[in-house]
Length: 213
Length: 229
Image (cartoon, rainbow over all chains, first blue to last red; front, side, top):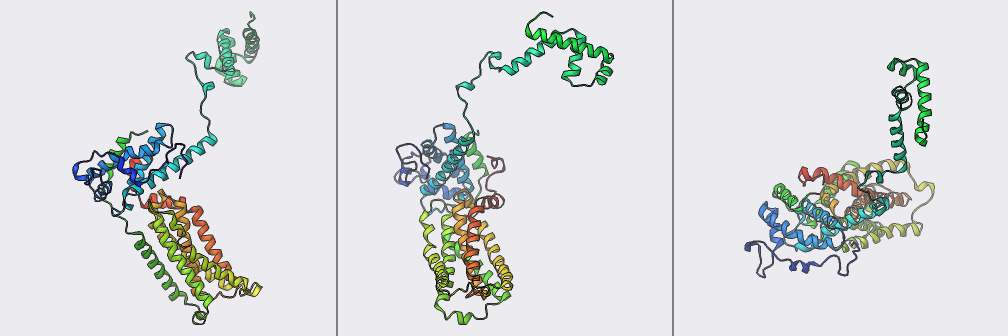
């Protein structure tokens, strides 16, 4: 059994099933006014969809109450409820109407809760929840770290260069073209490109240091 | 995340009449009947061991055979019972007395030097035929059990697979003792306990994924749009 932190035992014994108030029609009630889930399941096994819908709707809050004792987040408890409903559906042929429905359902709920608790343990071992330090801010620059700031500064500085130097840097440094390729693409001589690149780097150095070029 | 009431609607739409499982003990009997058929066919094909009547006079042999058979029967009953939701874990203990008797008879033979540990105790030629018997018994019984217990994939797969493996192992060991002349050799230990340990161990290790694999193919009970849930 999973060790849930609450004081009450995580899994109510079968008699607790009787605490659930029924919204089922009178035909599905037994003399003491409690819904007979066993009879509903027997009808569902025979293909009665209304009985099946009624059963699942009545079982849902009960399973949720069990799951809520083991999980803090409502979303986790809801996942377990859905897992339990899917399992009930998948193995509904294993239910014997001559036996009580409660232990059958609680056994399935136990199994799904254990599975999810195991999954949580595995996730905790390799994942970290985001803390306050990982918070993002509305101001865009506040979310940028220093590397990105430097890149942005470089891109801004390149934009300020004269057109011939800017094109030379982009082709030779950013696009990593060879001198021949750049010469062919721009129609300028190799020497002119070399000179432009040299001047561009010199200018960039000044721009990034904040000195006048 | 899908809304739970939408899920209920989808499940209700996908729900049709289902055939209820027969009582677990009846299903155990069906599996044991299959085992009996397999054993009978093997006895016809390979022949019962030649000294069977002489061996049946020996109490130790008879107790060992009865122990193996009882282990198989009780473990089969326990596995079918345990595969159902809400069944008590105490069913796990059901085959233990028979298992103790079966293992102790073999162990006692070893203790009193009844089992020959010298090189003459091992006959390689017999080993190949034993291996054939082993596979012919355990493979069909394992497949039948996997299909019959597929719904346990969603409940307690490892436990059910291990106890089911014990049933198969004991039945295989019974078949080996019935068909092959292995007495008074270390082969008894190798084949009986060794194969039992290997089968039960494999079932315990691979039971969960194998049951899940079979369940996904033989029991597509969930509507296709929900199977990826």
